Length: 411
Length: 142
Ligand SMILES: Cc1ncc(COP(=O)(O)O)c(C=O)c1O
Image 1 (cartoon, chains in turn blue, red):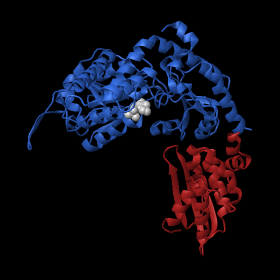
Image 2 (spheres, rainbow over the protein chains, first blue to last red; image 1 turned 30 degrees about the vertical axis):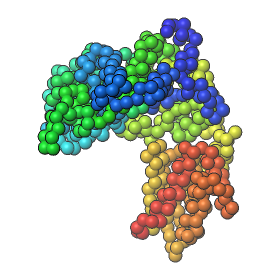
Image 3 (tube, rainbow over the protein chains, first blue to last red; image 1 turned 135 degrees about the vertical axis):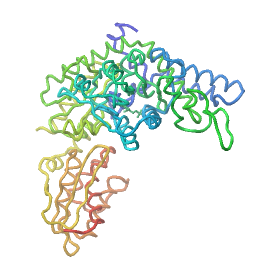
Image 4 (cartoon, rainbow over the protein chains, first blue to last red; image 1 turned 60 degrees about the vertical axis):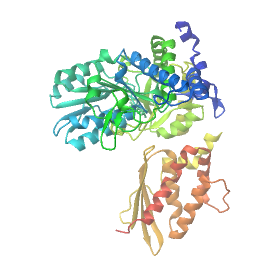
């Protein structure tokens, strides 16, 4: 892949669903923050697994099982490498980012006491709010919110003054699914280390857009979902530092995570298996590994450059339409092309229906960020979330759909 | 184009100038309706005397379809008996969700049946009616 590919703008050829039509129009898929599309290679990998390899792992002595066990472990090694060269043992497969967060919040309960503090940001997805809320309720700890400025970016210097050694854990999103803002996770990490707080990063939105190195960030935990990075649903990853996983009690109990079981006592398998009770999503893990290969072949620098072109073209188009209000995005370089917006007072739901008639898939609603909507003072927004495979030429059609919305509603 | 049938004039008019858009100062029945998926909200207030709707009002925020539907509903059901309301509600909701033609005259509600072609929006159109039915189930007070 190269600059020439960016100019040709034909990445969508890799994605079968992007060849189809909706409402008799070419599908323009701009709901990538909800889930990304899957390239042929990932789809084929999963089909091939079920057609030729399907068996359970770690259980049986037959060839098929041996083959799958090896591939499943290779998938884990691939994820470890992808996240910046972590240990094999530090990668836990989950069913998604949400489960990874629940796992850590469950396991942290023994480490948290009354009047400890858990910090989150005001732009978190519900998945990165509710588990911490419950942890605080169960332990008597306090949930604290990192301040945000009127440009809708985290106010890191104020945060640094506010946080104390009572803070035991800080949970923030790497990139916001609603605003597209990239949080300064390195600075947050430095602040956490200063007060001795653990750092949990929700990477659900980050991995399809930017290279992540959890060791450089020095994150204690990092969570992601396969389906948001061109992989299948039903598979996610929790990265956690080895010593933390060793200290934690298992999250779920069952087959695959044991060493010795009697009716009254059991001992557990070592990490990572200790945290993977039951038959894991094997096809999901192999599909995720294939998605990582796909990203490596496409290359993050190409993805980044293409997204910048989409970003600039979209912002340029919006600058000509005064009725559009985009939330945040005052500093383009702190953002990816994910935009929450409103058009005058047209309800986002109506915007979404009108866009759909142009074949454009966008999301409308609260984006699982109700507290953020309360801060913005709106019940909902419309959201366009680009992936690198979207075409620059789609932006003209978005413009048409915006104009149509105004024509219908602002006569 | 289907979009034009969804956002036809009568619906846009009710959205822009909703009728009965106020909380009643005196009411016997009320309920809140909420669609957590999209955040549409409707509250209905009814004043019922001798089994008849003497007055009705609503407040709310939401998309054009949810608000227009609430407005059209309020306009229509005034002076209806509870039984008549429940019957109309059933006909209207079935008209939006089932594949059977409606043989009753439902007046201006006809315009809202175009929502059927937009399955994701059916809940927007029925929210007010569900809320109205819930209010009739609720405790009387006021
Ligand atoms: C920032 C963020 N965190 C967490 C999640 C939850 O991911 P999943 O539903 O795949 O578990 C999402 C999904 O929308 C997200 O955008």
